Length: 232
Length: 385
Image (cartoon, rainbow over all chains, first blue to last red; front, top):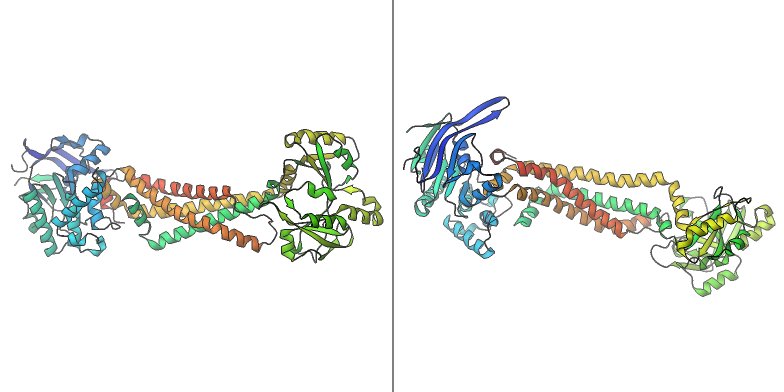
């Protein structure tokens, strides 16, 4: 199923969503009447110039921001109607986050950073350890578990962030410019990992990127401009 | 994980945290010492017995009472013992503060009323046998290096003349609240000299120390004693020893109040310092708090990280401050000599220090924690600290 056409099998179903921000007395529209469906297991890249609304759309999909109008369902659940506390629980179990600047806790080592989301679960210490070790092995950092973020390269930090995004086994992974702070080699490693997550583990990935080379990894590319989807 | 996060976060800005903790140490220490100074001021009142009354001239303490009142007070039902105590006010060596100490001319049975002064029987007997004998407190004897048999010259100020006393005994304190900084000699000896040189000032008492059998009858017996001398030339005012001592403290109430206020101001200042540290810390870490919230942690967890950090910092500073209070109090006591005969850090003071540290930690962390808890994830993620 192609993105842009709502359908029954969509993991993410967005209908007529609008969002604007207030700057002083001015209301600045950021997204206008967006309708988009992202099927299970898709890898979609959102592209567009600065201010086009792609990060805002990603934030709405991830449940860290709310639209002004429209409906947004993820796996059949209308997340726009959820209370903050319920939304936080939902994010913990349904969404994995990958940020441009990694957003790791600098005082925790790689193992602890990856373990962090599991603190919200009832898993035993042994179960947590097994999961974290598996996740770090998957991203090729089994030998860097005790390293702190400042002891890791940018690419390694982003791989720790990917392991953290995976650890609670979410259906949806959102990545905001995941290669924006990386050199070409590290960027390629990270994109390769995302492709594996999508192809081998069936994760649905929504990625925002400026970089035409990065979006080649995605199955579909959706363009935004001035808050509107560009039909492609 | 929570405690690890809190503890590791404290030392992310090592210099800032160490300076804040150093400030806390000084504040909690200063608070403890100032509270101990206030306690020391009240030490005399704390040592007062419920079974002792003080009878003085109703007009003013500076006016004496006739010595024969002693027998009339003793005859009152419920009174067990009565002893004269006269402030002597002599000068030892010179009028410097360091050489000042309290001297009293007392009846021989005075020490029967003060069981907290422990005197060896042979020394008590030697004192009673020597007209010029003196009993001195352990603290005072140690201060001036006096031993039994030493002669102590005093120049009379209230009672003119040169006096020489022989130390016949050194009394020890029953416990650490007992003040042993006084110098006692025979009222009979003073009275005899007065009879010879100033007959009109003889046969007079500064105050009567009145021992009573039942402390619960103190108010009633005070009234009975004062009624006994109503409409006489020298009416009396009888009160409990504690009330009498507090009357002295009240004369310096402004100073005591000022010390108390300063001790609490110190805590307010350190609160401002810790609150500033926590506010800066929170502002710098808004992106981290937003990340935690994005991962699913609630505002309560995020807020508790900040309050926990604030509390942990005040716990470290507070504990060090409390531990340092004890050696500092000893050093302070050594520095001021016998100005404060009793200068002990009370358990209540330690409890107040603990309470102050906890209160500062909670209060300093609460506002930044609310701010961090409320931060919108999208705005927090954009924040560059």
